[in-house]
Image (cartoon, rainbow, N blue to C red; front, top):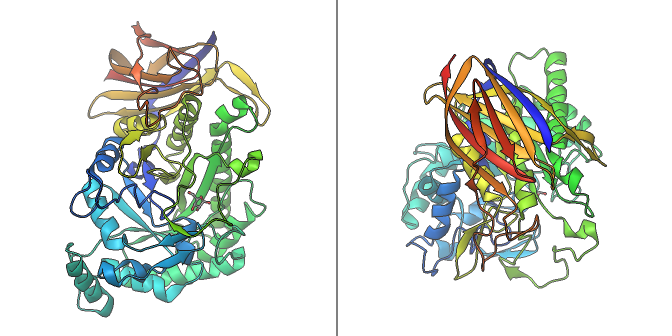
Length: 516
Ligand code: AHR
């Protein structure tokens, strides 16, 4: 058994929990939109074609903000194609995902769907094939009340599809997507992109000064331009933008489960690297305002081509509508990793103000759905849902002394991973804990300074089920093989709390606490 000692102090806080940390992503990719959130004719679809079974799961999972419409898709997308009477919308080839895009679902539909889901819209503009003019037109279309060309067109188009005419009020805008990547349509150098982002941001803000803007950062820490890209882009656009983006996907490489379970360590250092770069540009430019981070794509993603299997990009395949693309099935192990990635994001809530798990439905997603069939929760649904529900108030800075485990990629890492929040109003301290050891228990001793634990409000754990193994996953046939179960091994002993974590687990423990 491993031992870990965690100390928290109610006065040692990181930041207030940014609600936008619990974001998600809907891209026109595979079956995320079509047969995911939108499937006219499905028995659970409403008159708009929105699947109510999927919508209920989305509400339960609780994303606060959803990025749309891409992703790689946006770099070849004309937003005008997705508005107006549906019968008049053009059918296009989407080169990013080798798919036929009918445009039956577009901006009005997404804004309406988001209203019903209770989420904020985070809209990306195309800076791959398009530029300043189309971006500022889109802001006017979306946010201006009326009496101008684009805002009146919104009102007319809204009426044509039977949706509200009022402005969308979109606050957060992404200035393109992954333009550092050679795969991106309209790939750019940092110099080219930095100038374009600066001018586009300026023009968009002249239309609506209340918007917040996200510049494209690196597509991953392994990109050859990582570091210099952020530095160059921000050297141009620091004054004009509010956030720089980060993207990261993790997977188990050739059975190296220990390194995979330590993905959060890599995420920590990736964030620290971007923070350092942002602050270097801030200091050198004598800027007073603070640019923060929008980690607007993160998840576990099995890039099959890397492992020597068939790539699921189908360059040679037929052009079809909403093909089945990157529909990863997530195991217990994957869910524990997702839990540790959420822990990393929460620990960095002083600088990471927005984060979007990619994606929401079917495509590397916590929610799956079948065309004409059911919708269900993947294992990775649970850590997200619980953290979105319970991370409230202040993020606490934790001192963690944990037993170590060796990993090939990151050396020795803590077996126990932790994040915590304290909400003065509800009197709840929420602990999010992971045990990275796949075969041994971990015993956690938690000491609280300035707070006294009165009772355990609830304790749940996601771990290997009794009749399964670390690869067990939810499927259409068995939709609840992996779920949260009560964690009985939590006890308050004098002023400390003892928690026993099963091997390979992610737990959420809610304590009722009083000021000590
Ligand atoms: O989320 C899937 C894809 O991953 C996105 O389209 C792209 O931005 C990233 O490479």
